[in-house]
Length: 288
Image (cartoon, rainbow, N blue to C red):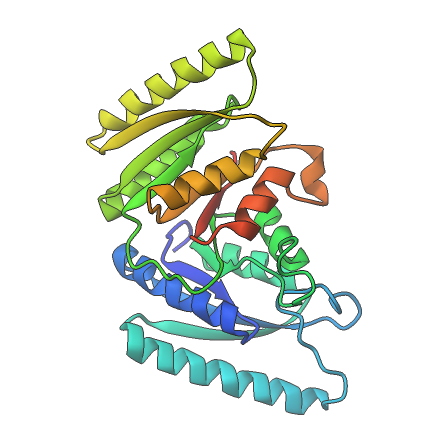
């Protein structure tokens, strides 16, 4: 039925990181009572070669043999995942431009979330920025995207880290955090990082933090708030956020992509760094 959100989409290139992202999706699928669509896209050789995540085309292998091999692998992973997780995992094999197909399927199945590996499969790029396909999916996806690094799978999102700034989209990010917190009975840790001594900025952030904390608490969710005063000449904003998440043993960081022309090609620097460097899952929400 149109508008019925009953799937989580997990793209895979069969790499270890993308298969761990599938495992990360199990608990989310169970608590939402939805199925998982496991998608592998055979890249369009005219445009996707070298894009990083999910581009493992090998021109030396005959196309039909390669497709058969991919299909067999996808079926095997899906069947095994269904048995292990007790979640129905539906395999789907497509050909085309990888990010376009991921976004298209997310729309077609009315995906509630996309869960995917954050970093490029290319080891030379893995530590510096997220893969090109991943950034394009984040830019164009019709739903929130949960990106996953490392091997620290979270069965529960008990502690959600919610960084706040003065953007107009703050209310939307707070609403999505509340929605997720109700599913998991989470604590929300609201933080603002102040890297300026401008009185007006400090007063606005302080006032907003207080209002957001009260707003969340009024929805029966345990909430804390904290202002961290930093020095931008010594450390980046990203490092303050990630250090705080580590200190409190956070399970999830929630960010919102800014609506800027820069997103036509790249994610903002802060968003990119958080997604790439975070050792815990990051949920990216689009402003509406």
